[in-house]
Image (tube, rainbow, N blue to C red):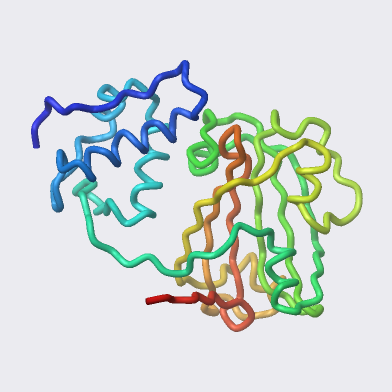
Length: 248
């Protein structure tokens, strides 16, 4: 792969977030044929030099391209171009409350725990923060018709929600609270589903045995100012399903 690429460097004076500009710059190299199917990308250090942005920004751009099916990451080898893939399960951006209501479920929440903690590496990368930056951590057991459906742990940058803590009572809809109190309106989200198993710490809450099959979900949600929420979820596979409508 040539090292003299016609790359469109992000411009800090533009209103679009740097991660979005970096994603578009890398995407253009693929769609315009500079990087071809099977080509290996430069490492993260080289990409930060080429784009003039931080490593966290590069990682976020790469993750979005991977989720879009344009890249694949191979542990111990690197990141490669993948031009052909099938993406299923696309649906509207809704809160859990709205999603369950659309399925006719009576929504409930319990065991809410809210605290302020320093962001670890995974949370910092998803929210484009520095390691150790303060985030609000909100852990909730989600119910449908009184039965456990999933355990969700949400992380929100502390500076986006001043005065959020202490949390009084149960929080029926996080998105409604963010909209009404802070003017945060979601515009898009990246969501990744994997098949996994219920961890021991979640099993009692979900009323299943440890190791029971489950959907393991990671979701980063954005508004006009960038990522404002990162959610780690474990959803009971017998109580939660994904439906897709396909068209010719």
